[in-house]
Amino acid sequence: MIFDAHSDLPTFIYDERKAGKTRVLEDNYGKFFNGWVSSRVMAIWTRPDKRKEATVYGLEVLNAFLRDLEESERFELVGNVGEMKKVIEEGKTALWLGLEGGEPIGESLDLLEVFYRLGLRVLTLTWSLRNAIGDGVFERTNGGLTNFGVEVIGKAEELGIVVDLSHINEAGFWDALDVTSFPVIASHSNARKLCDNRRNLTDEQLKAIAERDGVVGAVAIPGFVDNEKPTLDKYLEHITYMADLIGYRHVGLGFDFVYYLKGWSGKSVEGFEDESKIPALVKKLKEKFSEKEVKAITFKNFERVFERIT
Image 1 (cartoon, rainbow, N blue to C red):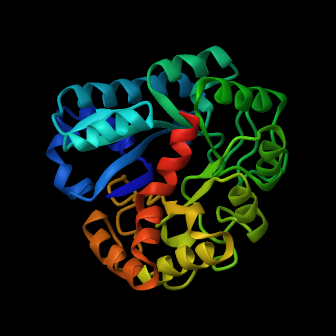
Image 2 (tube, rainbow, N blue to C red):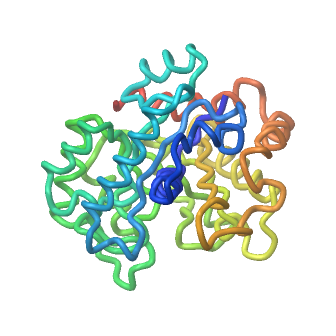
Image 3 (cartoon, one colour):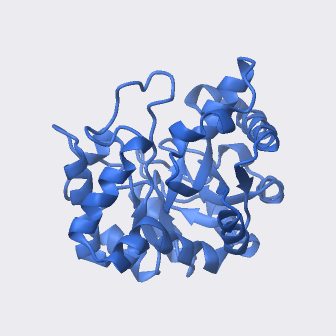
């Protein structure tokens, strides 16, 4: 079983349904889940061209996702680990709702609660740009969390929403840890020591997440794996490096496959282009880690954090 902590599939579902398709998840089960992914965070990403209408766009994407779920027999939206386990035991795939960037909530804690009531359980505070919560990694400034961002984290704690620190800049990362004692995750980030990309995490950041009993999901975006030749072996190096540095209990998987998004075709890790290559990853993991450690990395670690918070 695989717990994938980050997927942009809601964007694909929205685009396909706008084009007149139905049962998008159901009809693409073999392609996107391949019998391996048992639990996945489905993140609503506010595309840069939609930032001015982020709330409307976010709700439209969410509505498309929920309508698609209604047409599906294989998937269910879950809100806690108990529900996740039940869905998996029934032979279905458990899906969690996430926001990749807080743009859809604007500057409203009430909107955060509305999204929670609609299923939200994972909040990636920023995408790579600035929003009302704080600065993303690709902003030229390094502003950290805003006052509203501090309030958002407090509200997330109150509601039971997992705080995700992928995409936020370093100042915001440390600000977030200053204002919460809860476990945090970085759903889709790698080790900057192995690939010098601002989206990856420094050793100090990795250690800080582990100290909170959080988890880092290794991401399969080529530019975050290696600057010259991103391969499955290089991806595995990130997992191994992070496990050696902070312990296997704090490393998971956050694939962030993008091969199905317009404009991203061909931008894949060699040997790990899509879900069909998961067996190859698992085989290599079993060569590096014990059975217990493989189960933890592929599923149990994120399960532990989500069970504590949601």
